[in-house]
Amino acid sequence: MGDEVAAALADGRPVVALESTIISHGLPQPDNLRVAREIEATVRAAGAVPATIGMLAGRITVGLDDAALERLANADGVVKLSVRDLAPAAAAGVDGATTVAATSAIAVRAGIGVFATGGLGGVHRAARDSWDESADLTALSRTPICVVCAGVKSILDVPATLERLETLGVTVLGYRTTRFPGFYLTDSGYGLDWQVDSPEQIAAVLAARAGHGVQEGGVLVANPLPADQQIDPELHDRVLRDALAGMAADGVTGHDVTPYLLSYMHEHTGGESLAVNVRIILRNADLAARIAVARTDAH
Ligand code: PSU
Ligand code: MN
Image 1 (spheres, rainbow, N blue to C red):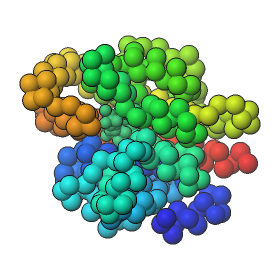
Image 2: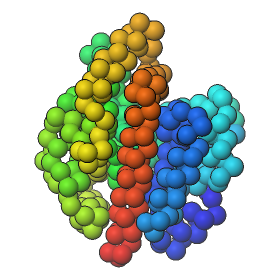
Image 3: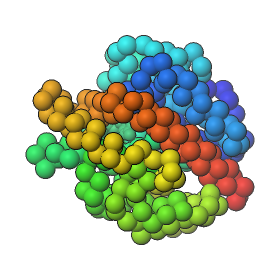
């Protein structure tokens, strides 16, 4: 664990977990390193300590330093690690980037309760045949963490993902909305049961959850982009259609599906999807930090 994160946790100060797959597989070089640093700076500006999580030469690290961020951003062959990959990757001594599933599991073990990401993994559109459902969902069903995201991308089957979150017992809160956000789009077209309007209210939900001791899994906070900042829905729909067709033509499957679709969107929206992606992550980092601060203030 990084010294700064260890000290903050020991003192009971607010800490926000951050994932590394977004850096190594979710954003293109060279923007990824700049954005990784901006995410951390955003968490700090809101009064919390950032703990970016990843694996360096087989060691799980909570609170990557700047040299480590640079290594995961720039090295080729950084392995994308879900929970089930952590042990073999550690034994093999590789560098790896942790997904939402793996980051959540590690964060909770380390005593961190709030986590900011961009978009959550979910049920893929072809899941009826491929069975491709992100382990992010099942990990959240058993990991008591609060994850701030902008919903899921419409590269996924959004209603199926919401159904699975319900089945798996994951609480979903809309931040100042009752519409589930669609990452690049403010509204995915699907509704939510619960709305919260402040970090303090979210902290109250987390306190109630912990107090009951009944619910095993996590709380997802869905933080939409303001409508005037979303991607032009027409451009979005057209590029998405092409991306799905390209993926089928190239025979992309398994854990390569999400990175393929993300980079396709980045390349074919003239940089718009990247700019929107960055805005989303920074907004989520800010809200997560304010939730972490509200939790410590409530004690
Ligand atoms: N969705 C995004 N951006 C991302 C990811 C998902 O909009 O960077 C990354 C996250 O790390 C997430 C992972 O946990 O992809 C999910 O991959 P899979 O679908 O293979 O579980
Ligand atoms: Mn998958």
